[in-house]
Image 1 (spheres, rainbow, N blue to C red):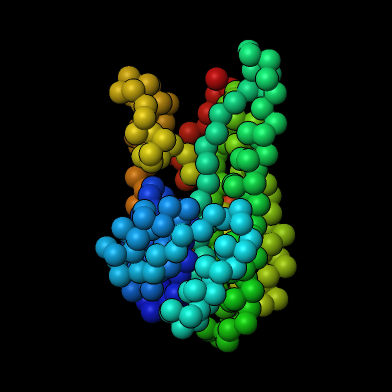
Image 2: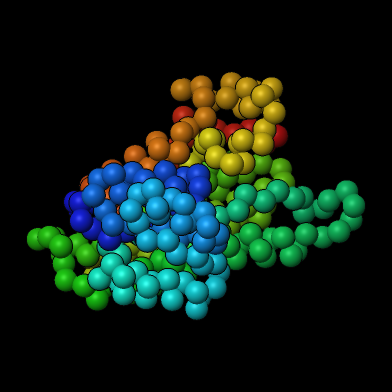
Length: 255
């Protein structure tokens, strides 16, 4: 699929991987809907790239439906490209030392990372399926979701996060198979250690020790390198139903 002149929607696009993705797609000619829970953050990015700012919580089905309706009303059609980057990176033990069971934290993490992804994917697929094919293959669009290497290499304290991202990874193939009949591809990227807001809070020594564990290159990934893979997935029509680890060849130890 050619990115130029296509409509794209990116969630979590007010910062980090989502922001980099929105900027790269816009730089290649897409009209980008910048969706973030913070409308102010979305607006700042949208103003910079000539996009449409949308404020919505991806766990709120009504808010997501309204956001897609806004895209159609203001950009003239439903998105052909949908990229799910909204998510939270929570940490908490199943048996914490204070004795409190973190059930609420687990539920919140799954709701944002997995159910939110599913809601956005569902509305994106509905909009794509209603449009005419773009090419001789019958392609109508592509959905790209974000997992994490934690779905395979989860650390102690990452049970909720790993479970939520594992769900995203696991639904990739069945979603791709289901949506194949209407020419919609579904892919997932599982990033490793990246320079995001979470990494910004690390101490220099701890960050250095993390980077030393990365085989090559021995540095954290840059958000635009994630966005570069998004671009390549959009443009390559035979990438479908797969989870791609983007991780410097790292395999995380248990602790």
